[in-house]
Amino acid sequence: MEIPIEPSPLLDGTDRSVPSVAEMVIHCCELLRQRFTNEELTPAGLVIGCGNGDEVVYMRHAFRRQRVVGVDVKLAFSMAARRERCVVQADAKSLPFQSGIFDFAAAFHSLEHVGDPRLALSEVSRVLRPGGWLYVGVPNKSRIVGYLGSPDATTWQKIVWNLVDWGARLRGRFENALGAHAGFERTELVNLLREHFDSIQVLTEEFIRFKYNGRLPPFLLNTLLAPGIVNYSAPAHYVVCQKPR
Image (cartoon, rainbow, N blue to C red; front, side, top):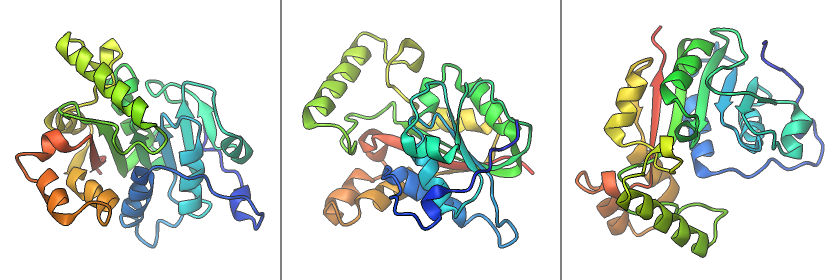
């Protein structure tokens, strides 16, 4: 399948707002833009497990009408994503795209849901061009507490989700394959990515500062990000890596 390239109604002067997205999507866009040269004016991007597709719409806006599409196994796309025709119902383990056609890919808290992350990453590597970039955000399996920064969840939901997680830990069922929202430990994620990518840079501390600088007291932020603590205090891990050239 070729990359769908549709004019973006959100950028044609009409009075439609760009969907709001999580900070990790904004961080991803800012980081990836720094990695493209002036010659790469039309980078093509793929969002794995794009949910309702609002992240794809935002990224198309951030990259100024560039070729960004999303895939998700569920057909629950928003009106904004449907209007842009930038989403496809597909499984990350069998992407319906030609090899080497994307310049970057992103997986925002979706890799833990794909069933076989190795196969999904193999597919992502296949559709990326040599030198293409991948941005990944996943739950930190070593976290003590999670979900605190979830913008669309109530305090009660966050409490319940953490109790469910800890119940799964105590029963020895805190695994993605068993349906838990477990995620990956830092070393586990890096080793998984290393099978297909290099230039692996863990961005966990950088992202947390990006998200919480000015929102948390500096002393508290520095304490949470201390080397002996961050692997347990960080609710998620973020990584950028590159397909070998």
